[in-house]
Length: 348
Image 1 (spheres, rainbow, N blue to C red):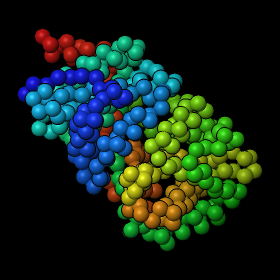
Image 2 (tube, helix red, strand yellow):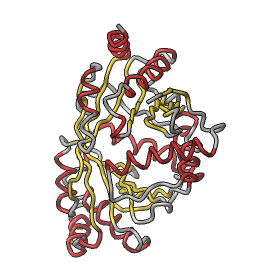
Image 3 (cartoon, rainbow, N blue to C red):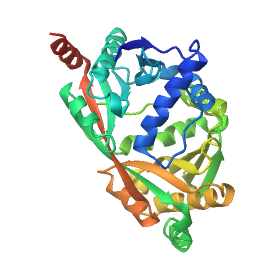
């Protein structure tokens, strides 16, 4: 098989190239989650082209020059708008029938070169239990385990509505002086400073051994992401709890719904500040959001979420709600210099 690695330009790629990339992406997705429908070429292109400038996405594709199909792809996101400029998330995916042919290693080289050019020190990647070939590959290039995660989903048809009602009632009893609120879509500009302070609660979430530092959101970064979601039609709901006496936010939960995949809601962040925990606020937020999804998006069949396996409190809440584990993933980190050592050893 004659294989060529080329950069993929999101704006100048031909329709045939987009179709090939989309076919590759849908096959990889189906390996990880066969229950999810494929993404159309149009939605795929719109999503990648609508990423905020701070994402700075670079893409490379491994092409089968004989058949014209895409055998594998690699991405790097330099996150130029983030304070964590020493690292970048990367991904490398290869079709099952094209594995063990050196394609992943060939895709790795332009990723590493781009990372070095950008002055990055560290790369981060994720492997999944459904694609076991990824773990030995990243171990081989010097990857170190940073965090293990559990993916789970909730079948809304089996949600215990009485349990959700009891969670809301107990929270009101235990957490007097708090009120729940909702933002649908972009955050209101008048509340943006408070929102930025609220989001900092996620810096208390487990991060294992990952060298990522604290998340430092800015108004510009949040507005970029809001604009990006608006362009692709993704809707975000953010439910928050506020301490009425101080006016401060105690915690929040958020979900995302894409009309292109109307049966699935993706759970985003959920967090409560340490000084407000053990009052039932997390369960109140999760129960109220689940009820809103059922009421306002009746076509939704499932909610998907990802949690660190070390996050026992959130995993406990999810299990009580009825979430069922279906995939384990590992977040890895590897030094850019170590990647080049690996690549040099392979070229000997």
